[in-house]
Amino acid sequence: MNKDNLHTLIDRYEENYYYLNGFGPNEKFKYYAVKGFRDIWFSEEARTMPFSQMFDEATKNSSIMINNRMITPTKGIVKMAEQRPKEVESLFRDLLFAPYGSIDELQKHMDEFLERIEEIRVELFPRYYRYKQERHAASCYLSFIAPQEHYIYRFSDAEEFAVHVEFEKDLGAGSWFKLANYYEMADEIVKALREHDSLLEKYEKLLKGNDAYYYDESLHIMAFDLMYCCRCYNFYGDMQYIPKKKNLETYTAEQLQEKARQERKAKIDEIDQRIRDLEIQMDQFQDISLIGVEVTQQEYGTGMIIEQDGSKITVRFAGKTMKYVINRKYVRRPRFEDDENIVDVFTEMDEIKEQKKQLETQKRILLR
Image (cartoon, rainbow, N blue to C red):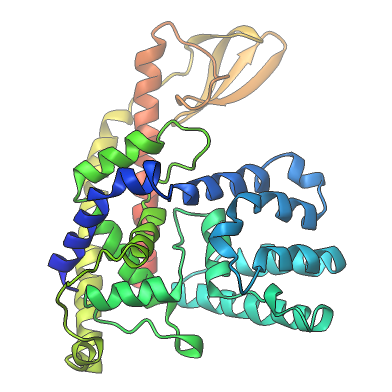
């Protein structure tokens, strides 16, 4: 990948950032769409809604992101779900959103979802091509559910970006599409975005703490937004690049395999070192015991901690035993005499554990 071109495009994106997301076309609607979808999908009310109604309400803020003059996939899902509610819902929950062990497996889920939902469309609405689902729509559904795992994909934006940054692997199209290659390129984009501190400061100032938008710490939405804006607002300009065909011809299959092996080994080594560093940090928490410590809780009064597993505690109150997690994000937890310091310590411990867990997951995937 041409890193100079990549960082130049990020610089041009940053130079226009406030215009794009405020005074101009307001491209931050992508974060608004994700927030709107998640607010409905994960709500208590959604459990009692028919799937067609729930999906319709969840995607109200995202129609401009998925639909266009030619196709209206979100409306198609609603119409199909009205007649085949269980089957359509199952295709989402049990297939498209099912756990996956690799990106190749995820692509199989996506492709099967698209194939089976198309069969339903043809059967119910054979004359309504506008209801057809495609990869962009499926990638949006995935990203709405788990934006920290997935990337929004659209062929025209991704392909042109790959050409201008001289991405070494072919993304493909149609039956030759390679989701793993696209995710690899998107990962590289995120890595580069994290090197632009001033852009991240603008992003945080714009969206963090704003309840109307989803604040995406993974930067996966921003990676798509970068590709989209580069094409839509012609940030490429007169950028010089090696034509894709010539660029790909310089890589033999053996070179690509060896390059991938070396990169995978380097990533595993880096992950191992980061895990060791976290384990060293964890040592300071090993001997902290809260058993026998008295606490107070607004609803149950004074109690005593009788069991502890890390930040998870069991408290015995008068006539009642309750379990809690000592972490800043849990507001109904009991209070300690030195509450702020204790909660800070155990919140930090949980954050380190979560970092370690994520690294171990990444390593397992690389070792497959």
